[in-house]
Image (tube, rainbow over all chains, first blue to last red; front, side):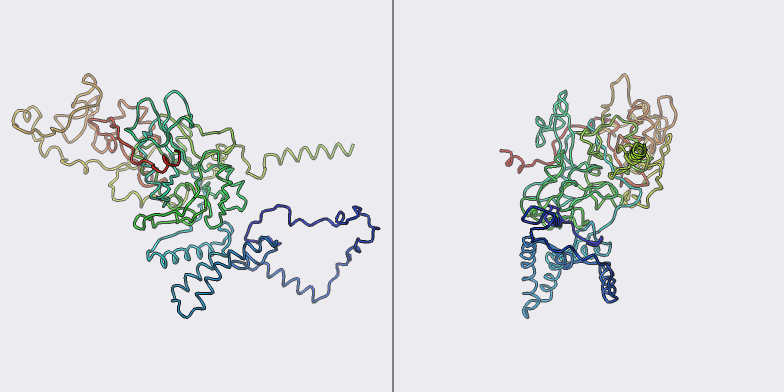
Length: 378
Length: 205
């Protein structure tokens, strides 16, 4: 297998070569039962033609492979092949149907072409910058064809010398929930299931953090007497357990510390949801829906673009905003200034001042997940 | 003999490599931040565009230099001397009916600690004055607040108190005290949360 493969395979040991020695039904490895084949020819000399062919093979391996090749030009077992073929057949049938049809319009054909290419694209993490731009362009065009609306989608990469971090002032938060509202709007979260990345927990004074006793869905005048408020969301761990458990590597930690998801690669197994000790991940049980006029059109491939049914999503520290120098929507919306965001590598940043001058702590620090989300008090 | 030598070398190699494991070369995130922060060269990301139309002034307090919103232009009837043309004592008895500033009641500390003259100077209405009678510009009104609220002032300078304007990158711009706190009534009243999740109630039934 060449080093440039564009997919991840789950190693269940099926592809491991069976050792020649124990394969015999007689249970012996020494031979003598008659069913052992002759030892392989130990002859490494090759002819000139064979050499040329080998060179060509090597060259071919270096050519970028995308789309169809990535999916089908690999060794796979029968079950996987059937599964892939069935999924592809659905798209393919549609694509062939429309492209060969004399009746279907140009737009329908283009839609089918986009669907075809999207179906067979690789994992975002492994794409080159051109491939990333190509899929972003396809998604923008697809949205235009379907909804007759223009969106702006970027594939901005992590910058050098940036590591995002977040601090939350427990004494300042008053439980107004402006952050939650801003987050839902900014990140195009499903309105039907009222998904929200941020939770604000109302906790009783003097009892410490008791999440089982806290109320994260209160509706009364705040701040309520004898209570304090603290928010949780994805903490963008530096050693994220959710990333380790993903069987298809659809979620990973970016260089600037953001833990992101490729919604098109996610298979919806929810292992990451189970692995997260902070309840930071959300699952789309139904097709996420946002009224067209409320859709935030400033999108990022790894951030707030529209998701589909059956994939995970979570806070991305508003990757579409933070990578261009803006604060995440929750930070901007907070009327109390309880939320502080910045670059951990910049020694003069406000987040670094907080870490160095306030008594900060993180949730479940002993797990070694190294969240980049600190709590502090005045 | 040779075996034990090999063992020593192996142990030595292990010790050398033990800290450079796959996950990175640091033991903790704090260690990593501090070490990599030393190599910080700055980024080309700027937050300048996000400050918007807000007019700002540069302030330097101690080691911190940053932008705060300009204030005088935001006060409805500045300059004050447009009305306050004569000393206060002369004005207080000439007006009948509705008074100017009728809507201002002082709800800041108690009468022993503060009255109007703690911050305002009747003889120089266009400026504020400090506890010792020095002139303080309206644009740097935080200097009045910091006379009593020193810990909050320290936190604000560092970035732990108050609110950022624009974005996390340079240039740093922050709200000043009076952008959130009404100086005459600095306490923030309680209110209702902006949302309630009805779906969550249903799910948890």
